[in-house]
Length: 161
Image (cartoon, rainbow, N blue to C red; front, side, top):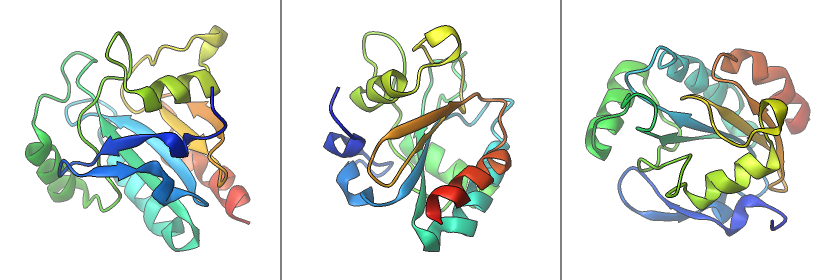
């Protein structure tokens, strides 16, 4: 496993390749998301967290995923429109990806290895699993889908201090 996440490239929601290296030096919260999930209202808290800390070097990176009961059925334009219209999302959204299985995006393989879940499981259990990454690109922690983004704020603030 390499030392940080900056080796990865992902396509954003507009199908443009972006190197995660552009986020070097920032605290990141990387989340697998879905538009039709019971946790979808967390978009509101993710946006609030982003607005609170973006000027201090914080980013939320959202990766839509349709692997959990097909709760992200739309295409990129539908996902982007939904997030903007319903939650005012202004943080970076990426193309739909797989977070488990044979086609897992390499970024999520890396995140899961860097911060295993309960009982050292690497599988992501559901939408809105969150990974906290420090300014050097090191994966620090995994948060369950049930963990509200507002509860992560103190840890983000501590990293930004």
